[in-house]
Length: 198
Image (cartoon, rainbow, N blue to C red; front, side):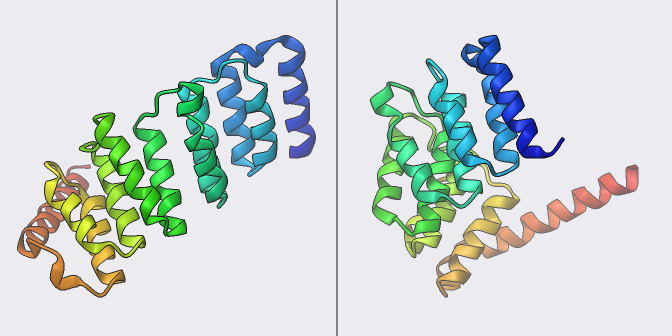
């Protein structure tokens, strides 16, 4: 059985069995459709869910982003409030990624304000996405400000801020390069130690 026939069969079975109201089942099927980049099928199923949870919304928003439908992802994200669904870190990271790809600085700044309102701006994943979004929108100083305010930083953080500065030819704006070097050395040492112990 080819993938298209399997997708249709699963969709029909869920509708006929009444599982469309089961959040876990529908999320699993949405992700299954998105795995095959069948965003239209995923959207059709999403619309059929009586009361989609934020996880359902996030699955479809992220699916649009990963498939390159950035405008559709943002339109869906902007509907969250009207449906009284509270966005979470995953919602924001997907929306910020879409803003970065489309160089929508103003919308990205608005979403940044929402992360502050919802108290997730210091989440490492959100902060990393903010750095990446600002960098792709050419706002280097904002990216470095987010970077500087982060309490914890990981390899993705350093890679994001370095890529931001390099992309905009502003490497001199990046702070604490010695710390970056020390951090990288520590990471490499830990990886080597872990590998040796295996």
